[in-house]
Image 1 (cartoon, helix red, strand yellow):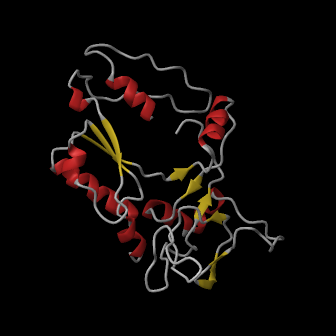
Image 2 (cartoon, helix red, strand yellow):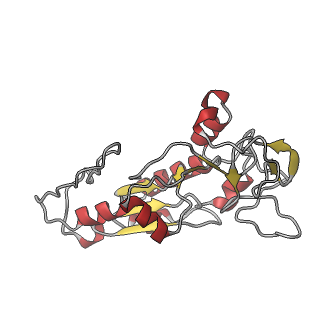
Length: 226
């Protein structure tokens, strides 16, 4: 998506880009729906993130495109009950639009590919579907994880294997467990002596992402062009 945006911004006014044919079973790539321009300020893009709070709306509005990372305001949303990352991204986008932002995106990362970039690029070239992960600090994902009707969407632990590398239960609450496979990469946690500064600190000894432990759950379906 980013490469398509950068390519489109470099086109002369009135020019058009021919999108490559999409592989079978994937959505075709699309170009931005706004008119290309020679204005340098509108041909810039920035990915912004302030983990300690809000990013400067005025700073973001100075670029042609600004996208806010889901870790933006992480200190705030990791402590919320329940976590409200999605809502805070929307609030950040509204503030930037109000400050004059032209094209404001949020990096929702509703699905995440946990692969190093070279491996991911190779997977995309050969169309091997990479595993995708669901982030429960987004309310739209959390409601699916909490709804038994959608349990078939997510990868489950082997019910016969109780010696798994990834723990089934929350570190802060051994009674809060999940049948869904999940890891703790870039995941908020309750600070403990062995890890006093986790990647997002939960407060009051609770990481509230609904009925599930706080972790990245793996989807059972794939996307080759995200």
